[in-house]
Every structure is written in structure tokens, then in C-alpha cells.
Image (cartoon, rainbow, N blue to C red; front, top):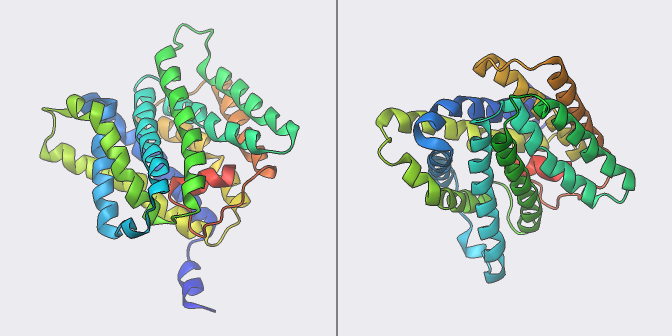
Length: 301
């Protein structure tokens, strides 16, 4: 038995994957108080900036290996990350956390269907979309088009993030990709984020945001990386399909967002569609250590 195997025995890989999802959703739920003070873009900018500092402390970005043709993809990936962060935080300002996660999840599901060689794979985004309709209940007076719209933008940005990560992941691996793209994401968010956050930065706000930056992206990246070393991408992606359900759970426990029976049925549809999408059309990653959330996304597609 190797030293690594002995070290990994106490925590099963599925436990690491679930812990990563819980970290992401807890970080999102706890961001709501900051959103009230800093605004969604201000919160995204500060969280990404502090996350970039932490990542740059942990790893030196592979600047010497960057080629000129890599730059457009790296810049686009960083910008997609920044837009995804802003849009998602703007969404949870208006709609429940689980609903926002489910809508955002349409991004990777659609990419999975588009990449599949099986026409039946198109059923899964359609099923997830039906689940989202049940979740958002557009026939009710409480329907919030702004929140749904922001979550839809986050889904589009997530889909773009998948495709760009797969492209650049063939050149850079692991924390190297994050150390290159998260600073770009922070700069992207700064365009709107700095004006929103101006005048509201205090030592307490900075400390709280630093903690959130650890919850997302630093801790999930590490947990996912360790989990993927001991799981197949299909198993990992199937587990990650539970993320919308965990969003509902954290929304209930932390934010006291109580879903209706119809909304519970909707979230189950999204989870089942995400799990079913794992069975075909996946692009096998070339990298042994995909970058952070991109590991999840590559497994979905």
C-alpha cells in the first residue's frame, strides 16, 4: 500500500465530492448578507480578488508556458468566470438558492446534450427545463423574472466556461489554470464591482469575504482534485448532479427558504436529468488534474 493510499483511506472519494458541493452552496448561501452591503458584483469582485490572492500564494502561475495563441482563451475563460459569478450572485438576490442552482445547471446539461452522439440525450435538458418551470412556478404571482434572467445568464456563462476550460485544459492543469484565470475574473468583476462596493469596505467585510473565498473557489478545488484521483469522471459527474438538491437543502437550513411540493418535484427532475446525462457523449479529459469547478463540468460533458 502506498503512502498516498494510506493517507486517503479515512475519507472516501464520494465524501470529498459531497464536501466540495456543500462548500460551494454554503459559500453561496452565506454571501447573501454581503450582497446586501456590497451588491452582487461587489461581492463577486471582492471574493474573486481574495480568492486570487490565496491561489497565487499557494501556486505560482505557469506564465512561462503561456503561448500567444493561449491568451484569447485564457482571457475569455477568466471573463466567463467573472460574469458567471456576478450573474449567479445577482440571481440569488432575487430567487431561492436551489432554484438559481437548478437554472444555472442547464448550462452544463445543454453542453452535454450538444456533445452527445445520441439524439436521445436532448431529452435530459428538456426534462431539466421542465423541472425549472416547476421550480420557478411562472403561473404564480411571486415569479421573479429578474432572478430567473440572471440565473439564465449564469447558465450561459457556465456553458462557455466548460468549453473554454476543456480547450485550455489541454495546455494547463490543476491549480495552474485557476491561478491564471481567477485574477482575470476578478478584474472582469471589478468593472461593476468596485463602484458597487466603494465606501462599504471594512475590516469585518474583508475578513468575511476572505472566509467565503476559501469556501469558493479554493476549498472545492482541492476537494474535487483529490476526489477525481480516486473516482471515474462518470461517477464524479453523477454525484455532482446532486448539487441543485444541495442548493435547496442549504437554502432551507441557512436561509430558511421552504420549497413547495411542486418545487421539490422540479428539483428532482433536474437532479435525475443531470445524472442521466452522464451516460453518453462525454469528452474524456486529457488532464489528470482538471481545474477546480472545471473538473465537475468536464465530467458532465
